[in-house]
Picture 1 (cartoon, rainbow, N blue to C red):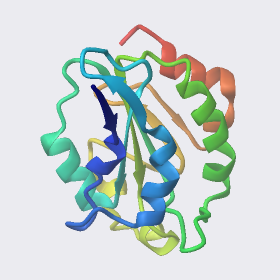
Picture 2: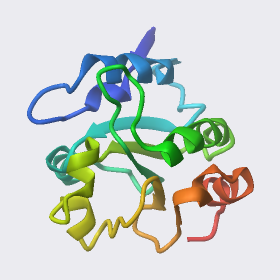
Picture 3: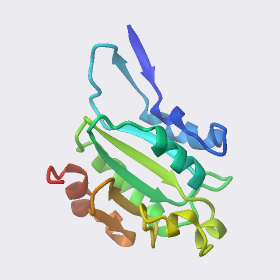
Picture 4: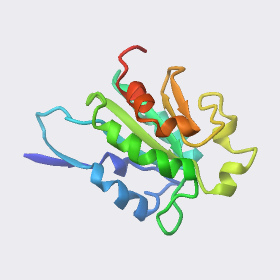
Length: 167
């Protein structure tokens, strides 16, 4: 029996499933697996907003697997992002995800629109667990390993972060 996995539907945004357009763009992440098979690619999740981010990690269990988190700008009503660096980095990151450990997780976190991100009181900026100063930022959760800003569109650096076995 095949089960269609939509880890992206684990979206929790402001108590709803978030914007449908975001989910639709991430549906290319869904894959079919037999119930007895292990995933053959990174398990991907999408979260939008700081409160949803906190809620997601409160209940998320990585089962000891590596977790990479991308903090990026939220897409606007037209589906495009306001952050130029995020726009340039995403194709590089998406391609390198195919090389990442299939027994790992990738969480794409949309920090919000430009005014939300630029607010000095933005939760992502103030949270000691995230320490986000610039977008995009990719971190290996629970580790000091991270890429920030223009580093995120450098394929060799992204590949190293996503495939490195050392914690």
